[in-house]
Length: 506
Image (tube, rainbow, N blue to C red; front, top):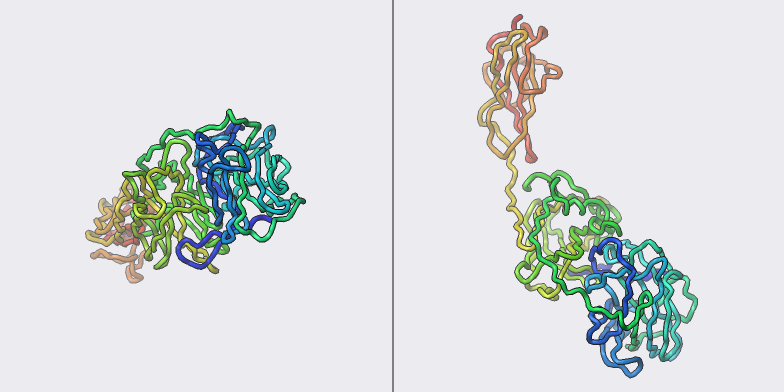
């Protein structure tokens, strides 16, 4: 059976969410990772090994050992934690740049101390940092049996559940006393109950590595580059958020949220925005990975702790969550959106766990967070996402046009001559204009703000939809006039000109 984790409701709700057991860093890896040697011995110079972190209620710490050699990683299965609690051994965000398994290299060896009184399973799991398994990303799990006491274990990942030699796995986690994700495992069952057992692991060799391959993480700092995501045609970063998140493109919607770039609804700044549809059947944590940076860019730093965006909600009191570090060690902030357009300010200054020393590289937005979509899909919009010192433009509401000066017709109503429409002038926001010409039996000495009344005995001139009209034989004996429509995202206004003073002639 696949490990069925529960993503805690981070907004204070008691609701829980289904997910997988292993979680990556949310970092988009560089393309074509190499199958490098990686060795973890948890010595003081082993930066990668010392960055290992536990999840789901377990505990981990590097320290001296009497069971293995020098330092080891001690993993405590807390009685209060989940039975599938484990430790992320390698993450891209902690400096791993190696592909951990391939068709040619797929074996991991390690020393393992088992405190259980009987044999128990040890599961090793790999996935990609680009798309965590809980977002549907690929993973492979291999379980072996460990006898009580000291073991030297070998994990051939190519024989594990989910193996795919084309996947660039760059995340690795270990689970003591757990085996559920590897359906091919036939060894000892987990020892029960979990009673704060302390397992130890050391000398982890990936792809045949030795102690000489123990490396420190790349310490070249990323830069907090000023970034504004507008979702207009020129915004190549914003364009990546459209469509589903995948291993090849980690940006995009997941867990039932469909994303596309579309015209912004009325009331915002116009132009285009990121459209987010929380579909029927979506998970309550459905969201969108707005940005996933690789090697050079970080999100927030000591001088830039605030992220802002313009946001549209179709309903009031809707929770909106923004995360800079993904689950299970999620770091984010939840605000409440009003109905309509608004500017949301996510200030991480006082958020527990945020520090300028950590280089956050992902940005994930959760519209209507922790709320079941119910029987009807709901649409939200995000626009002008600003971080690292960029500024979200203030929302300037689009105002419906209104006629200030009426439309006019200029020219001589004679066959072969051209009449020209003056569109008039309008209050309100910028508008576009369309035209419709009429031939009428009754003269009109006043302008109007609607289509001609029946009493004017007018008919539409087919095909006459531009700002000019060349008089034709069919117009002879009729008065001519034009209807101008001024339109923007807030609405439209009609301006009907007076008719020509005389009937059209040959």
